[in-house]
Length: 205
Length: 205
Image (tube, rainbow over all chains, first blue to last red; front, top):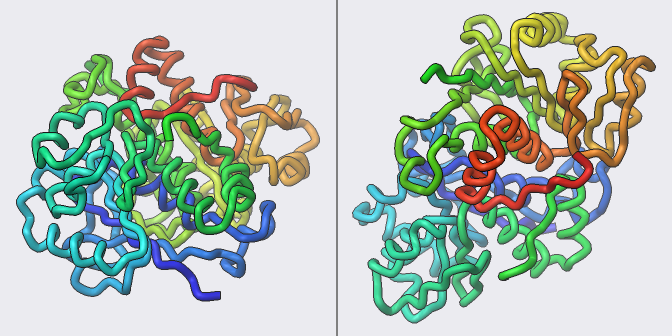
């Protein structure tokens, strides 16, 4: 089985659950239900990995330190791109090499998505022009301020308008499950949710 | 304000969301509501940190690599001990120095808790004797097999019997919010849940 590469961007002051939630979902999804199937990668449809800007360890919000699998210079082809948020997004809004990487990676990916204020980076990379999108409730105005050509929706947990944006932090877990469901069906998504004992929020999606 | 030290154990093959969920909750809790208060640590009541067995980077389930803040030999006093689960717990059931650290740390802590199969380590350290406890649904029999003096409860998300055990993976987030609520009240817990847009599961608690 050819596995789907899920590239999750990480950077200093990335919000922990923004990247760790989707990482958990994609790393624990199995096409076979139950607990036993999760003991190996045999029926795992995804290969999730983290991608950082350079080789330095990343310090997430709260001080959690992560060593990425790849950098934006050496990472394999990404099928599903996940751009998480966090306070660290603000200083990256002027990082042209990162924005250019996000744009070119998105162009080659089958799916581009953001969690929380990761939407600000997608917007700054020009990916949300003419689209509906959402973000963390505290960053609605910040997203609007990047471009008046983005239709920013409030009170939505996930917005799917070719580019998929989700609201704050935990909504990234629901977004990941939505992607799993779209690719492999409701049963695989709900078996995996049962495994990680997560109660999916399906309203406002 | 004297901050409460939250020590979160990590080890190879720790389940990502088991430790990252509680880390997120404790690192983002603020005594002041809203988004602005989360931009600094001024009203943060907790200092969460990770603790590993040795100085090597930890490889969590799915391959996420973390550099811990401390090891079990050099970590500061822990007020709230969190023992997460994951397949890696199985090989640690015979690690006497770790089990002894868990026991002595628990003896000095105000709160000892586990997420998922972290309960197996608490049980093996002798901390669940004569108590009610729970674990991941797939590990109920494994927990029972450690000691017949543990009253293992199925279909419960959190069990609080001096030692606090939670069910699988995501239930650790609900457990963390319960601890926040017990210490600082429902408003602080729900403000923080709103910030991370997490819908708390309060049934079966």
